[in-house]
Image (cartoon, rainbow, N blue to C red; front, top):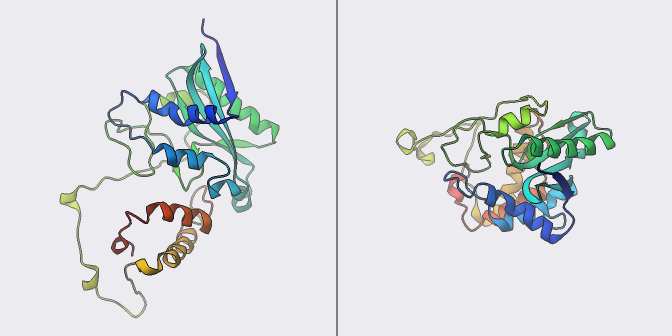
Length: 251
């Protein structure tokens, strides 16, 4: 009979195992697209990414018979409480082999963390907030994951449900093929006295990005589980995209 255990990530070797486990888990999947190791490492290290100024995160590794077989993160987000006044903790970065016992122990671990801190509920997966990858794929397993959308095996949904979790929201992703895409020339769209539009100015990209943050936070403020993305987070992400960003597509 296999023995199961969970260990808190506490050193560089264990962090590398946490980052690398999905590569092993999805090794034979032709649809899963791995995230860059450097980006995932930066996101998970407290001294590397500005998101950690607003959240607290504990990472856990799960073992079956001494073999790494699962992982999960326990996440506290004070900004969420400030915005919604709900004592909610979060789980994220959840991965597991198809083993209910392994999954149960991972969820028991984050739930115990939540109880110790007097949280009233736990929601997820958020990796690590709603402004990043979140949710569980429940259909279309024969398509690769797209930007900021999750990919997982088809058994994940049932493993989570069997831990007494229930769906909170549907997260939808839409696919548009090139032949269905309507292309237009923005310069030919009539301007009006009330609405003006233009492409972003690459020479003042930092300023343009900060304006977009204000628009985003205002537009999404009443969305389910919304938390405002900070200017520092946005500038951090924009810095990594500058080399490939086409400002003509930023309206």
